[in-house]
Figure 1 (cartoon, rainbow, N blue to C red):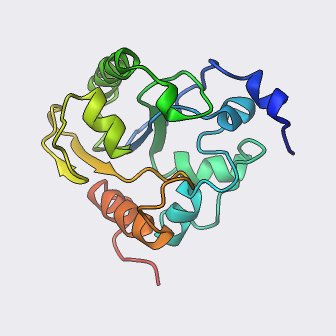
Figure 2: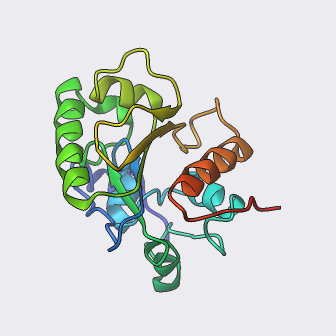
Length: 192
């Protein structure tokens, strides 16, 4: 399936439901849904996004999830059966994350706080250092393990998997996501 620019624009400002399996062991938190994600209803769906390739390369999923046309039930099961959930700092779909306001990021952090306190995942991984710094008022934060405000939940910040993020290679993302999944008890031995 493909979308024209006009098709995608029609999904601007829509929201995508969080993926919240029970039990929730690991919650990946994106910045906000892109227009392709809003169009398909599947997180990190835009072709070229490296989220699912990194999960697969890290051995977190057995096969490569292809969400470009929405979730296939078998692909979705690979996530939910492992207790992997996905949310966003801001639920509003935009073409680029820099379209979000500082207020939206703060409101998103408050929404996430409520969600995490209610669902109590073992690990939360925010994917995007710049958004994390702004949303959580941590201007000097670096990637990696953070001091968690949630008792019983470990907090990590990892690079954003967008194809526009040239700072991290697919191998870098896979190594980082493996460490995060190991902390959640999802993987134990590295792939390859």
